[in-house]
Amino acid sequence: MGKIANQEITDKLSAKFGDQISAISEPYGLLTFETSVTVISDVLTFLKTDDQLKFNYLTDITAVHYPEKNEALGVIYHLHSLTNNVRVRIKVFITTANPNIPTATTLWEGANWMERETFDFFGINFTGHPNLVRILNVDDMTVFPMRREYQLEDPNRIDKKDYFFGR
Amino acid sequence: MSDINLVEAPAGVEGSGFFATSLEKVIGMARANSLWPLPFATSCCGIEFMATMGSHYDFSRFGSERPSFSPRQADLLMVMGTIAKKMAPVLKQVYIQMAEPRWVIAVGACASSGGIFDTYSVLQGIDEIIPVDVYVPGCPPRPEAIINGFNKIQDLVRSESLRRRDSEEYTALLAKYGIQ
Image 1 (cartoon, rainbow over the protein chains, first blue to last red):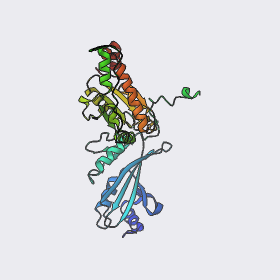
Image 2 (image 1 turned 45 degrees about the vertical axis):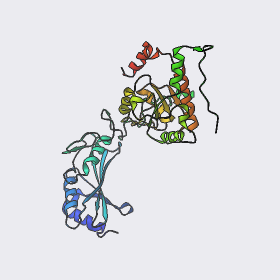
Image 3 (image 1 turned 120 degrees about the vertical axis):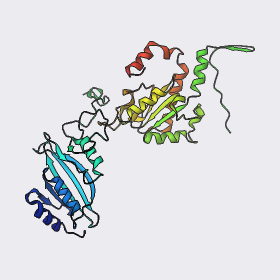
Image 4 (image 1 turned 60 degrees about the horizontal axis):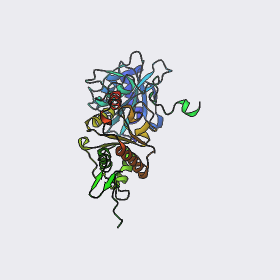
């Protein structure tokens, strides 16, 4: 167990951000909550710079796509407090029509490549990022392959066509 | 010790003190028995090729004593393994850097058709970007299969016309891949 209880973290966050912290849960003991795109920078700054919490390590930034939801794109942050040995997971949901979210590169240099990867696969636009271009896929790719509306298979594949199997 | 096998001379006219045959056959024979392969190995098929090169399967007994790691001095491009789309321009560049005459063998399911990686990031067979002479099936193929594929290349090399690389068909084939 960490040196700080999850309850203590949620209390501090709720005291500072009030309603902006929602859907708090603890799956497998990992504190998880949602926040909004307007305060995400402040939440990350608070968690990193607070004297007690000290969430100084950004483990990961990624995204998920729920096409059936109104706010279909979720940006997920994993933070780790190395001194307190405790982790949190932060979710921010945004719409595909307006997939903008402020960058975390101002807080962690390591966010640079994570945000580029998230942009590459989900098309999340991290505003303020110094160099938001594709990192893993080919530069001339026109789609965001991890979004559900794009098929995962390559359209050039011919040896799986139905006529080879009498269908 | 096994007996040393020599390559049989091509068909020709023989008499006392002379032997006559066509230049094409002699050059074909010489090329087929000294192919310098460039192994372009990206995954498990490359591991099988390492076994093929080793002492047990002894790839060099076919005249490929020297795997060439410079495309300039290679005759045969052996593509072994998954080629991601990001790797495609690199592979094409290697092919362009090779001097004529050059041959290509696609070893394994991934190089031939994309294999199990039917996905947006993987090239669905290297014949999308460069012409291929021989395909070796398998996932990965055993060394025997790779050797068999190599022997097929040798057959092609042995019987290839000296004028083939200057023909219109060959130019058209390369032009189809955007290669001069």
